[in-house]
Image (cartoon, rainbow, N blue to C red; front, side, top):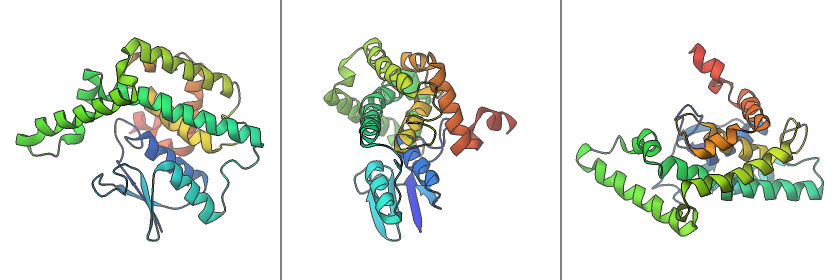
Amino acid sequence: MITLYGFGPAFGLPDASPYVMKTEVQLKMAGLGYLKVAGDLEKAPKGKLPYLDHSGRVVADSTFIRLHLEAAYGIDFDEGLSPADRAQAWATERMIEDHLGWALGYCRWLIPENFANGPAHFFDDVPEPARAQVRAEVLGEVRHAMTAHGVARHSLGEIAMLADRSLASLSALLGDRVFVMGERPTSVDAAAFSFLAGIYCEAFPSPVRDAACAYPNLTAYGERMMRMFFPQYTRQAQDAA
């Protein structure tokens, strides 16, 4: 029995966290059945989501979850890739998560209008007398973490410029291929799609989103992946609902 702990659907996305989406895509890629439930950050092994409970074994962090699934089920998400291609896939995944991911987080949390429309609602269940203080404290913690990382030391224009370089690199790598590394999805697609979906989310306008929209092959890729893994979240399905 596999139980995936995530945040849950939000902002028109399958999950508020691209890391949770990444794990969910890999579970779908592997054809594994799972139950997805709302996680509690205070109970999460590393204080973050996602984490996985696999028949009593708890695994935290999306990358370690991937490694666990490969070992437990004899899966190779990068099957068919050469050693050089595997290295490129890993390097691209790290660029996406460790660079674009911070730009995505900044645009959600530290652009005031986006924070008000999005993450601020994470605290709606906090009792009203304490809600504003808790919201401000968590926002302060996020700002501190982003300042320590360095991304919050840049202007929004500088963040968008740097993000655009990563987006351009991803666009060049994808080219006219169906998936990032070729004709079948591999590990890097789970990350690329999930973070692009977060960037493209209409709830969070930003110069980073504008930059991403300038790459037609990336927008087509994001739509293709959404149809493949979360068809109920495509624009057509949402309009029909």
